[in-house]
Image (cartoon, rainbow, N blue to C red; front, side, top):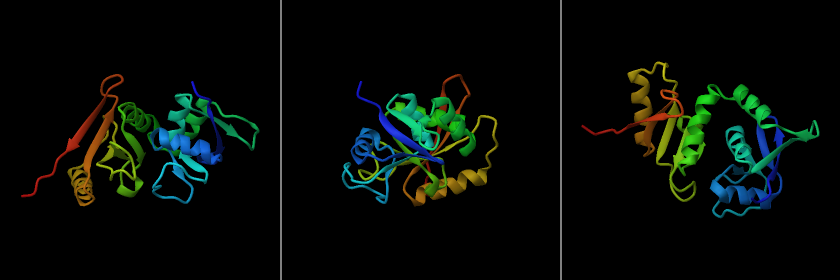
Length: 185
């Protein structure tokens, strides 16, 4: 197994200061965002890589990164990283289950905030294609109105994406994906 990449925990983000290591992580699956480069044209860059906590938990769980808190001069455990992510993300466990499932299914998953959803999902990766899917995570017992579905569907259609609602936890370990298809009348 290759060596673990050292990552620094700063507030709500994880930073890979070494650009070579950051480029390596980015090439592995489009993890993170190179600082100041919104859409890298090549996977090698000379700036730090910023990871969000969702990615960080996944990469730490996979033993690809080791996270350090330099203010306390010690290693951050996976448990502490998850705890911080739960404070930052509403419904973290459900969202992480979906993130994990999509990553394990070989999709590239990025934050979907600019599309008003939880995740933008790619088959190949940003810069290679536009994200074909926008995914919102809902609990099995949560309510969703027809208006919310129509709004999300209209937005998805406008930005040429498929709208998907992911529902974790209906059956142990399984996630249901509800994919909406819009027809013009």
